[in-house]
Image 1 (tube, rainbow, N blue to C red):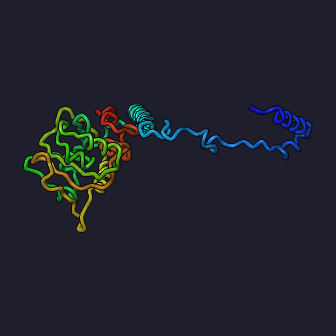
Image 2 (spheres, rainbow, N blue to C red; image 1 turned 180 degrees about the vertical axis):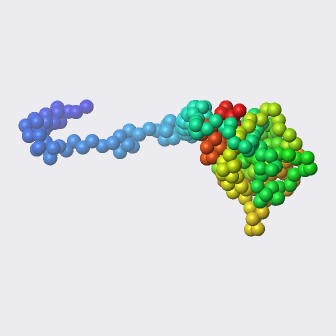
Image 3 (cartoon, rainbow, N blue to C red; image 1 turned 135 degrees about the vertical axis):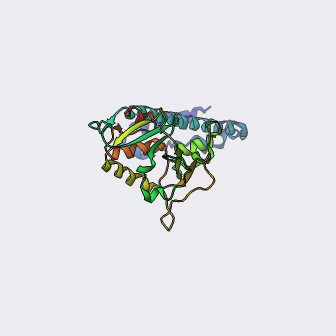
Length: 276
């Protein structure tokens, strides 16, 4: 509470101050505003909410949960866009003028439901490659595929697929391998492609460089890694990712030689729907 003299003095000061111009007021205004934290008496108590360890931990946890929620939301959005584009682009064809029915060289496309291979009669495999591949007597055809090395070697069956392998294969560029499988005859479920001599030559020019070779130019077999005695793995060039899958590799090869196929697809159906 202010005494009477103090009130009178303050009133005179206010009257004098109000008679000044705005410029003079700004120059002579002595009523400085201090932040609340300037006065110790106005701050929170030492053991208040801000310094409570439990409260600080809760705030940090809340921040972590909010950040994690945003990351998951963006991840689901990205996956949704990826899946949508995968379906959309797999229905858009290229090389539409090609019928895939003309040509003296018939090869095949074979899928196990997820992974796509190209299958060649032995007589269509170039000698420079065939001489380096081991195959059993009675083999008439070789299926060749490209894919994630870890997925190939660590997942003989779908029951053995682990989250670590799946996440690495999809989201991280990873090492790759070639898979060569022996076949004794054509299967009824295979789709066929008829190629000209030039197209077949161009396709091999795409496939052969994918095999990684040693200093002597020989393909590098991953000895003992096959699922059975009728298939083998070899080192390969290139990185696997969700944008370049085993099926994308086949799709690119067919697209380059003028075969009707999808503009882009990570799925086997994007290739098979345009084949006979």
